[in-house]
Image (cartoon, rainbow, N blue to C red):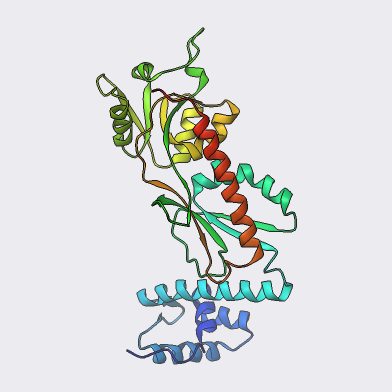
Amino acid sequence: MKPLRSLSGLIDFDCAARWGSFKLAARELHKTPAAVSLQVKQLEEAIGFALFVRHPRHIALTEKGQELAIAVGRMLADLRGKVAALQRGDEESVLRISTTHSFAIKWLVPRMHRFTKLYPELDIRIDSNDAPVDMEADSTDVAIRYGPVRDGDPATLFRERLVPVYSPELLAPGQAELTLADIKDWPLLYEKSPERWLQLLNENRALKGNYDFSRAYSHWGVLVQAAVAGQGVALVPYGIACQDIASGALRQIACRSARFESGYRFLANPHKENMGKVQRFRAWIEEEMAQMELALDRKPRSS
C-alpha cells in the first residue's frame, strides 16, 4: 500500500471529475488540457490505481475514481468554506446546526426566533438531514441527534415519551375528550411498527379489544401531521408534537406512557465546542428542553 505523500493533483482531479473532461477542467483552472491530464496521471501513479477510463473523446471515472471524487469534493468544499470564513472573519458569527428532518421542522425551527432574538448577530445555518454527519468537518458546529439515550450521559438533552394524540376534529358533538376506551373507533397511527402502541396499551391494561393498526409512517414529523389532519389517533414523541399540543391542533389522551429508550443528544464539533456561539446555543437549547419537560410533567395522566 502506497501512502499519499503529496496532495498535488487533487484539485485537478476534482475539477476533471466534475466536468468529465480534461479540456473543460483546464478552462476552469486556466491550464492546458495536457497539464491537467499529466497531474491526474501522476496522482494515479502515486496512489496505485486508475481514476479515469480514457476514451478517444471523453473520460469516465472508474469505480474507485467515483469514491475518491466524492471524498475529495467534500474535503475541498470544507477547505474552501474554512478559507472563506477566515477571510471574512465570520467563524464566530456563523452557527451551523445539523439535525433530523422531523426535529428541525416540528421543534427547532418554530423556536429559533427566540434564540435569534437573544443573539441577532449570529447567522444561523440549519441542515436537516437524517444521515449521520462528520462532527469534525467545518460544515458542522453542533448537531442534535435522535436515538438511544442513557441516564447520566452529559450529552443527553431530553428522553422522549410517546403520547397518544388526536385532532379535536375527531370529537363528536358534545364530546369533551377522547380516552383510551374510545380509540377502538379510530385508525391507530404509528411510526414503522405498532409495537409501541401494544406496549402502551399493555402498560394501561387495555390490550383487550379490536384495534385498527392500519396506518404506518416513515417519519415522526409526517406522523404528527397525519394526526393534525384528523386521520386517526397517533402515538408520537412528545417533543415532535408539543407545539401542536400547545396550540390546540392536537390533544393528548391522559394515560400512562410506556418506557421509551430514545431521545435527543447534543453533539459539538470537538474543534469548536468551546467557542462562544456553541456555548450560547447549548445553554439555550438545554433551557428550552427543560421547559418542555416541565410542560409534559404538568399534563394529566390516568392513575
